[in-house]
Structure formats: structure tokens, C-alpha cells
Image (cartoon, rainbow, N blue to C red; front, side, top):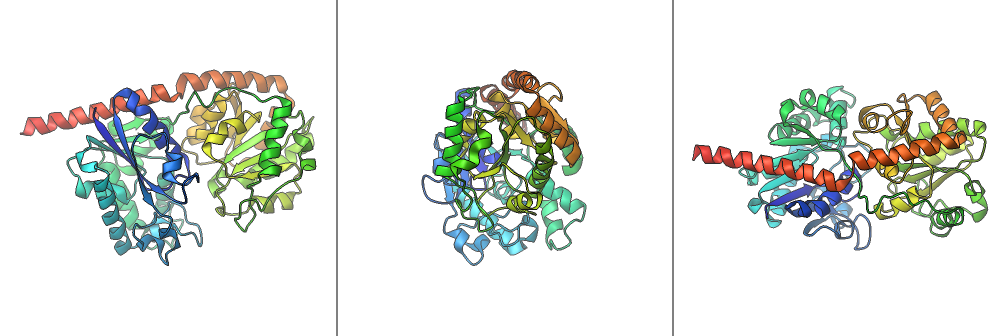
Amino acid sequence: MPRVCMSLMFFPRGGSAQVARYMARALPRTGWDVTLVTGSLGAEGEDSDATTFFRDAPDVHAVDYTQSVKADDPLLADPPFHPSFEDREGAPDRVFARVDDGTYEHLVSAWERELADAGAGEADLLHLHHLTPMNEAAERAFPDVPRIGHLHGTELLMLREIDEGLHPGWPHAAAWAERMRGWAQNCERLFVLSPDAVRRVPDLLGVEAERIVWAPNGFDPEVFEHRPLSQENRLAFWRKWLVEEPRGWDKSGKPGSVAYRAADLEAFREHPVLLYVGRFTEVKRVPLLIRAYARARECFDVPAPLVLLGGYPGEWEGEHPLDVIEETGAKDVFLPGWRGHDDLADGLNAADVVVLPSVREQFGQVLVEAMACGLPVIAADAHGPAEIVEDGETGWLVAPDHEDEMVDALVDAVNDWAKRERKGRAAYDESRATYSWPALAEDVAAVYSAVVSGRSSVVGAGS
């Protein structure tokens, strides 16, 4: 079979890791062998450990950052830790736009070695997630192997911030913007997450429109299914996550530093549960959601707890959720902490509505996973979510950063049981028709074959 070498610089943490995991598992059924090269952090058994997270992938080449992250400069360690598309003060993964030329060359050299060790030079195709120094390493070391890039949104957000001059303190911003655009332009194809990105990316990156391919993220239908828990099991589930095995964290970043008592869970008893899933970064607008919930709660006909699932330990931008909860006096807001993706389907089936207020979500992975479990969703009417959610049919779309509209949507979702049920059924049907991974993998494989065949015909014509 032909072989693709799929590469992800980051350790498993965000949506791109979920996509790589699904692809690595599904593509062999389409006739493609997959080698996955990826960063890794922590001990075996932890979700950030690549061999644990990608355990279903047939061939994983993990680059272990566990010792590197402890170095004086993690990006100069061997192997070097990865930079970030986000600028978080004190984080070991400083933003790319603060990485100087010498460190950049160190990153490129390290990834030339890692890709070579994984057999990238003998692969039929390279599939590179994000736009990172891996692209430069692939171009230098394996110029004859065709490349497909895969944009996940965070790189586009950083480019937008550079273009708008929002961070004058980023000394190397211009160099990184030029590099990233060059890497995109040198890919045979660019996968993007939404029709909105299909329209925006050609001008943003200077890439011909015909090389942009919509490749939506999806879900595993064997995992994400409508299996609602009984009231007794639902209460037991939330008791386990919030009381017995708490992982919520305060500003110390220590999992378990936020915990609850069984008496705190009265709002979960036979009442709808609102669920946010994601990181606590600024674009996610978690503070806005908490403020909207505090107001909406006064209009609920029944109690409806808000669960903020996620927030990678110690990682937040802007206001910490606990500060906003204290400021607003919001009751029944719960932080169960960061959980593995394998646990997410259970969490969704213990909830009634998923809420994603993010204003720059390039796709919205959790939306399709929630819909696959029969949940209606509330999301901002922008970018990926605007393409996924049909307002009034599968959920509610609200104007970005519009707290009043979010309040109205929360009240409607909680108080109108029949509407919630109807939208949930429609969401279930839509998710399976559009976002199921077995079918999506076939589409990706077709693009692979077209790129390899096209490159072969060009090589043959010139020989």
C-alpha cells in the first residue's frame, strides 16, 4: 500500500491531535498505510503522552518533550520543545513570533532528523498538520516527496494578529508570517476546516483557490452515539467527576485544587445540564459565557448547572473562570478539569446542551461530537460553527461577543424542553450525514491519490 507520513509538532492537547488520531486509525481502511510523527509529553498512561493518546494508530514515532520542557530554554533542548501560536506569559512554549533565527534553525534541524528517522524520505506523501518548522524541514530534506498542509485555525489566528499589528512586542513576527505563507504556497494542497476558510485562505496566504480543499473534522460513530444516561447514572457520573475524582484547578494549576461536595450537586438532580468543552483561551470567551449564564439563570424555570469541562491544567488567558464566578456570584457553575477525549462521549451523554461561545473557532470539533450524541448546540455565528449549526434546526446561533443573545439562547434552551428535544434529533441526523469519519477518510484518501498521481505524471513527463 502507499504510505503517508503524517506529522504533528505538538504534543496531544487540542483539536488537531483528535483529527490526526481519527485519520491515522481510519486511513488504512482506505488503502493507505500511516506513519504518525508527533510530539509527546509525560509518562505512559497520561493523555499528553503520544503512545497513549494515539494507541490505535498503527505506527507512531513519538518525539518526547518530557525532559526538554524542564530546560532553561525548552526550545533549545534536544529534542526542542515546540513553540506556540498563542502568547502566554511564562509558558514554556513561547509564541512563534518571539522565536529568533538561531532557535528556528535548531527546530528545523531537529525535525529533519525526526522525520528522517520516521522514514519520511521513503513515504509517498507527507501530511503536515499546521504550518510549523516541520514544513521547512520537509522541504529541505525531502523536496521530492509531495506535501499536503492541514490548517487547524490557530496558525491563521496568529497570522491575523501579526497582519493587524496587535503585538508590537513580537520581534520576529514579520519573519514568521513570511515563512508560514511560503510553506503554505509550497504545499500541493491545503486542507482547511470549513467553507468559510475555503473562502478566506487564498487571499490570506497567497495560495491559488484550486489548491484549497475543505476537509471537515469529524467523529467516530462507534464512540459518539446517542446513549443518554438514566437520572441515577447521570448523577453518579457527575459525582465521580466533581466529588470523587476532581481535576478542576485554580490559579495554582494543580488538578484537584477545585473540588465539590455531594451536597453541591443538587442542581444536577433531574434537571438539564449545560456543557462547555474546551480550553480556557481568550478566543473561547468562557468569561462571557459565565456572565451570560449568571444572568440567564435568573430566568430559568428549573435549575440547570453549567459545567466547564476542560482547561488544560495551568493554561488560561485573560480572566480565570473562578474569578468570573466570584465576580458575578454565579451559582451552579462547575469545573471538572481536563479529561481525556475517550471520556468525552460519556460527558456528552450526561448533558443536554453544549455551548461554545468561541468567536474565532475555525471548525468546532465538540459541536459535531455533541450533535452525534443527540445534543443541540449553542454557538457563535462566525467561522466554522456558523457552517455546522443550522440556527433554529440543530441549535442556536448567537452574534459573536453578544452577551444578551447568549442569555436569550440559554434561557430558551433550558425552558423549552420540546424545542431542545427536536433540535437534538435534527442535530443527530445532520452529524451522521455530514461529519462521520469513515466517509471523511475516503475523501482524504482521494486527495492523497490525486496528489501522488499528479506528481508522478509531472515527473514522468519531464524524464
